[in-house]
Image 1: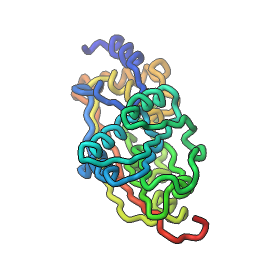
Image 2: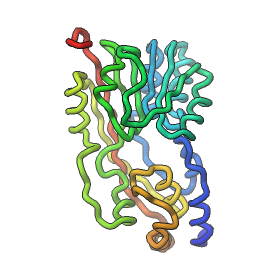
Image 3: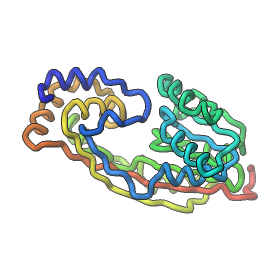
Image 4: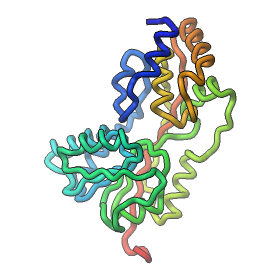
Length: 262
């Protein structure tokens, strides 16, 4: 299918709930970091007693890791997650039901609705906002925060194509994350970074990606950006694809024992 109108119509109607990206198979690709976040999270869940996944989306990645922990004969006795968007929260409740998971629907920047020291493992994959103080508060002494964050400049090529050249801030930088964790009293025990290639093979995939990952082009709609999508369609027809770069980093922190106030 290479008719622009058909592609734009498809890009506008594909459901975007959850973090299942299987629709993109054959239409877009994104390299994955070599560290294997879901696998490593599953290993940690094997010995966790209480686990919280922050901004879980549709719960797909957390479910995968919990299933791996269960298959290995372990897994937490208490499973909880937070999610800000109601359609995703509904998906997460269904995804985590086999693990008796509770899903709290709260804003990304709201306080976590759990008492202090509740969990020995807090995780998050691609959080929009990282509330370091709240993460530290709900962790038990000796507990771990294990997460994969989106780094600086992710999909900047797409942003700039759609909006014109945009300044790249450091709000998602590794340095800011390390500083935030340490200011909250957490010990940073591991950080790993990767820059990866992503590629789009039709403009419908671009439209669905931008509707799904809303911070790449804030306020994006197919109608509003129709002219730029048409220009990208011509570029993809000419070159075969549109390439961009993503940044990811893995960060692991520990809440120390015996800190005043905890």
